[in-house]
Image 1 (cartoon, rainbow, N blue to C red):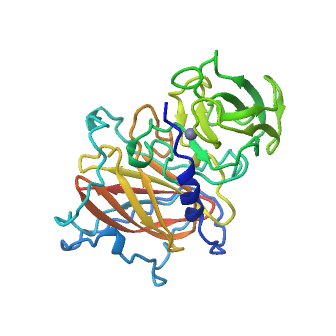
Image 2: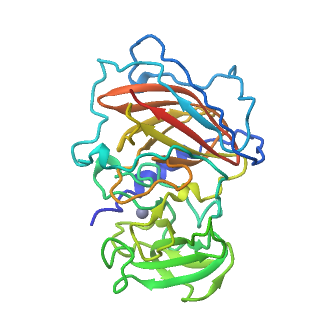
Image 3: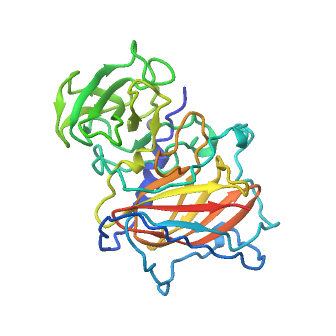
Length: 357
Ligand SMILES: [Zn+2]
């Protein structure tokens, strides 16, 4: 298996993705608002190539007057497909996913954030080129059921939340991945806290050793293992998953970036990219720039066994974004679509829906 080869490059990208701290002010979490920001499509214009597109946030945009908790926005594109787009941002035919076979996005979305995990299970940053639901650089890897932290060999993996050790040991004989001997040395924590009646688990993969035993209670921040490259990993990193209700099931994961607490002053984005019929658009690259001016990108879930969040119904998500407005460019159908002014709020999950014509 080559599923987890993507840890090296992402380490660099992830560093860039964190960017300089803008010293923002946290916004208290309150009730959901439906600040639906519908913008009419502007006249067709040519979208400049991404490499030369000088996209930066302006200081003149007014924040939404309804800035609390989960910001819900529906953005419409400001540009129609360009005929001059070169290259192929579209993934190859690997994902022969019939759009109508995907789950239809829920009509309702939002709700209170469930930041049950601490901001980091150890050292390092989340690998930006192989996020949850993506297939890695060049679409070479299996759909990722977790996120990878670029943690060094032998560094300490810590409990992201208080709970009880459900399993600690090798997966040679007990299967947690698509096969045995996939995650190598595994630790699974059952969180003390449940979510809407569901059990929540944090799975750590590829450890060089485990430091806990089955049934052991752990406190948040307590060491549970050492980072390694066991199982199918080709280099040391920390693989983290969120599993709901069925801790042994590779198919019952959610995006950990919606469970990890963003670092102080930053926020989390839940993105939904759909087509004109309202179906999820799988494998679409989304480039975006937020208030710190850093270039970031996501890839929408390929749906080979990964799941949207039960509340957000997203098909991409990213944590630790600076608050303020972000401008998005979606690559789909051989074209690019610009969606300006999606608002990210500190300490919250901001939901943005990008509907591609
Ligand atoms: Zn991984």
